[in-house]
Image (cartoon, rainbow, N blue to C red; front, side, top):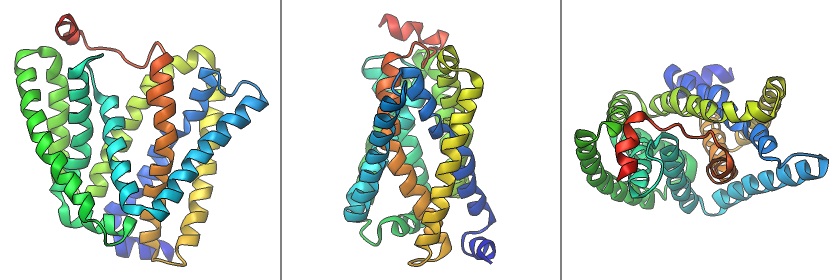
Length: 291
């Protein structure tokens, strides 16, 4: 009955996309437990309790902010998502041009999906925060204008520097994909097929230097199953106040927002700052580094 309602309200493709985000994309964040162990934050019971308490508290704080200040929190979530997704794709190691790549690749996800399917995305945003979505669209329109300017610079760099061409090709392919696929399907394609894969490739080598493969798998599986169970409970609770499709979308995306904050601190700040293997530059970037 619940499945029938989901298929009827969302459509099969959108339902498959949401399930892919939850069942395939989520485990890449579940690797945070193994990353914490690699960095030495969970050595011993006391340090493990401190780490997981801090991680959970940050996630809970994001949920609380979302409930009290939904519009502001959604804007904040979209902003940090741009940074997180952009850092994942940037090929330049440092400097201003690295941050131009970060903005271009991260913004392509948010702007590309939102502007290609305004009506559908607007509908999703109202599910998440209610009717006060005008400030969100103002931010997206401003980002879109800046994205066009940055894209012009990116085109010039791709013409003059071979090290930029693969990134530019990826950017163009993603924008085409986002324009052709429904927004949830396009995001699932990126989140599961590119972002999650890159994350595992990035952290995998470092984790294997300090943790047995069995331990890594067990930690990822344990956190993933716990997250799925908690999500199922939250969907069940949410169904008392909304239809099952709205409850599913809220739990998945508010859950992503809640986990993104501690995930970014751990991965983008602590791990990238200390690990020797989060970034493998392309051969073509040598010209950019000499600049």
